[in-house]
Image 1: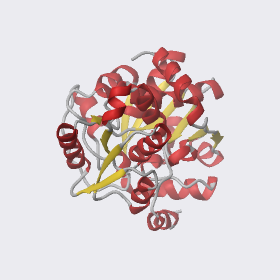
Image 2: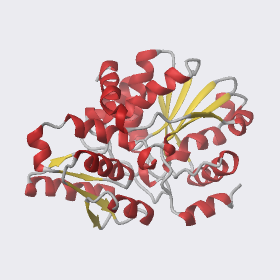
Image 3: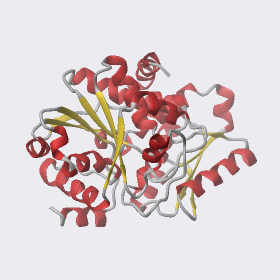
Length: 318
């Protein structure tokens, strides 16, 4: 994948998505002694960045594949993005989510008129079941991350960041399977190779961190996480691993408690509702503020689909 693929994706999806704002954060800036700005993808249609990649993929499907219908597995946000794209383009869609998916995300998925299946177990089990449906029903499987068209769609965020703030020298991006950060990394490095691209995962789900550290895709030990949007392993042969090796400078881990604190802090100081997966960037600054002293830091806030009870708990931490 190259920079031109991301420009083509932006041209393709522009009429269907928002160009989200990038907002200064005096709170985080004062904390680290830098200039921090938040890229607010929680204000994107469907409440997360996932609509970008889903639309790019669905718009590129040939007519015969659209007619077969699609199937996917998702912890929630990709499902909503795909549901939105399915409704816009009138494509029959089945979505499999793990049983741990919050009710707020399940209800939002159903509103798009797709067939929703709640599968017992974690995300990886849901993906295996979705792959079974792909074979049994002849549908087209649309990965949440392991697809160049998905990655190119997510990369349009990087173009917007670079164009709205050309002085930015560090981008902090949440990492799950790597679709978001590999797209943003490609866009930013294509515009300015000097921009540092820093990924963040929870200590509870460090698959990309461990894989990059070892130089190959590995299985990592997983624990329960409030950042469920980043939860799970990396599919063998995933295109995102090679892209992350190419475009990502480093991936760091943050504690679950800090993620919760960051959710509360962003709500308190910015009046922005963000989910656990979106809070790992602010959490990285909270845990290690000295690392960012004097830097110009763009932080991707990837989504805002969160249960009220968890939000109340987060607010109690600040």
